Image (cartoon, rainbow, N blue to C red):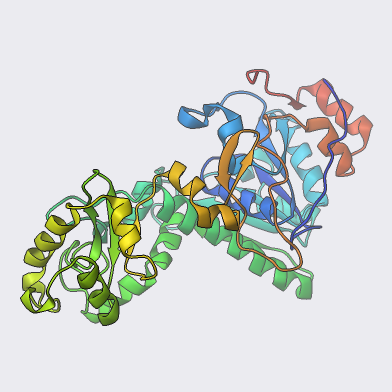
Length: 396
C-alpha cells in the first residue's frame, strides 16, 4: 500500500472545517459533496468490503457525489473499527451518517459516544422517516418518502398517475440539502455556545418543507382541483411543454399578462380569436391551439423568434446544457477527469468554491488521510494489523 501524502489546497468559505462522512448513498454523499465543494476537508469512511455500488454508480469515477474528498476504508464490524471513526471525530467539526435509527449506536459511533469524544461536534443524522415515530425503522427509497410527504400526489398530468420527480425532492432537496443547512446552523450556534448537538434530518420532513407553499395552498382551499389542473403543474396552457416540428420540446412559461401577450405574438396568433386564458374550462382548447402551432416550427426556430422575451425556452438535453453558450460563459459545468458535472454553487466573491479532485476509490487515502488528521502512525499500524482498515480490493 502506497502511503504518499495527498496534496490539498482548500479554498471556499468553509476552508478549515473538517467533516467525517460515514459512507452511504444518496442524500448523505450529496450533503458531504456540498461541504467539500465549499472548501471543507471531508473524509469519507467507506466500507472495507461488501456493499458495492450498483447501476451507474458501479464505477466510482462517475460517482460525482463523492468528489472533492478523501476516502478511508474501515471495517466497522471489526472490534477496532469504531476506534478509527472516533479518532477522526476528535478533530472534526461535524459528522454525517445515514444509518437507520440505532445502528450507529450498535456500531459504537452513535451521537452519545462521539459527543463524549468531542463535545463541540455537530452530529448529522440522515434517514427517510426520522429518528422517532411509528415509521422510524421502516426502509424505503426517495419515492416512498416523497409519497409520504403529500407532495407526490400533486406532481403529474391530469388523468395520469403521479409522476416520480427523479430523486430531487426526497434524496437531494428534502434530504441532503436540508441536512447541510441544519449542520451549518448548528455550527453557527456551537461557535457561541461551545456545545455540539444532533441533527435529525428526515427526507419525509424535508420533502414536506420543500412543498410548503403548496401545502399552504391546499390548506387555504386555493388548490382545490386534482393534479395537472393548476397553473404551475401542467394544467395551464401557458405553463407547459410542447412538441416541436423536429420532435424536440419547448418550455412555455407565460403566466403574467405581458408574457402571455408576447407568447401569443410569437406564435402569430390573433388574441381576439383565442379562448379566454383565465377561464379554466377553456384551457384544454387553448392548449390544443398552442400545441398545433408550436408543432409547425423547430425548437430552435421558436427560441430564435422569442429572443429577448422570457416566455419560452428550449428544453435542453444534458449534453446540450453543457455546451450552451450561457452555461459555458458562466462555468455552470466543469469537467473533472473526463466526467462533465455541475460546478459548485452558489458563487462567492472572495472565497470561490471549486471541485478539489475527482471521486476517490474507496480506501484510496486511508493512511495519508489518517496521518494528516493527526492519528499516530503506531495507532494506524495497529488498526491495519487488526484488519480494521485497508483498501477495497474490489476496485481496479
